[in-house]
Amino acid sequence: MDLGLNGKVALVFGASGGLGGAIALALAREGARLAVAGRNREALDRLVAELKKHTEHVLPLEWDLADLSVIDANISAIETALGPVDILVNNTGGPPPSPAAGQDASVWTRHFESMVLPVISITDRVLPGMRKRGWGRIITNTSSGVVAPIPNLAMSNSLRMSLVGWSKTLAREVGRDGITANIVLPGRIATPRITFLDEQKAKREGRPVDEVVAESCAAIPLGRYGDPEEYGNVVAFLASQGASYLTGSVIRVDGGLIASV
Image (cartoon, rainbow, N blue to C red; front, side, top):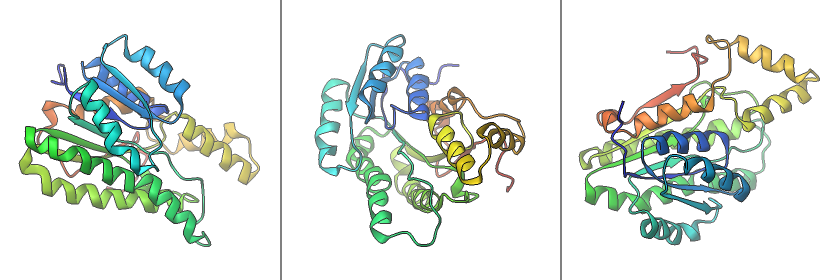
């Protein structure tokens, strides 16, 4: 199936991680021109080598999302090298495990400034061009915790929920400009982040990691963790021409994990 993405310019954040890398690969297979941003240069270089099997148009960017001062310069560099951004994939790292109560206000502020404000600011930077061209895709990765809050991930549940409200509101504002805005939330996808969370849970509860993983898989109707490629394929569809009437939605890629409707 041709998703109609050949020559489209995509900016994917968190590309040095499992989900971001999988998304970038899915878009590259469809012929998109890729700007991939992350903090781990070695991981970015490995990803670029994979992407270049599918496209020669790849620009890696070391990018600390907490630094809002670099947004304009980095977007300008993408526009010069690849063209204006058509597809924006907002994918930020998560805060450490934490309960809801007793967290210092400065910790909440720090993670808000690294997880929420950059998404809003970067989107604002690329939106005028999308509006001018009459086409754009804004896809924001959150977490299953925005539907069913995950114990001991209070900051993630809360801050990512703010992005859901923002994205839904934005979708109504830009729909007539040919731009869609959607939220994608992963369930238990086999990435280093999930491995870390499983290890932390095992440590807290004094149990073997294998036991924690088996218990987690048992709660998923499909009986396993998702493959990052499966997640990337869903995001690529949301970016496609075929998804032009899909906006303001929250798409679960969770193997049926979330029990609520």
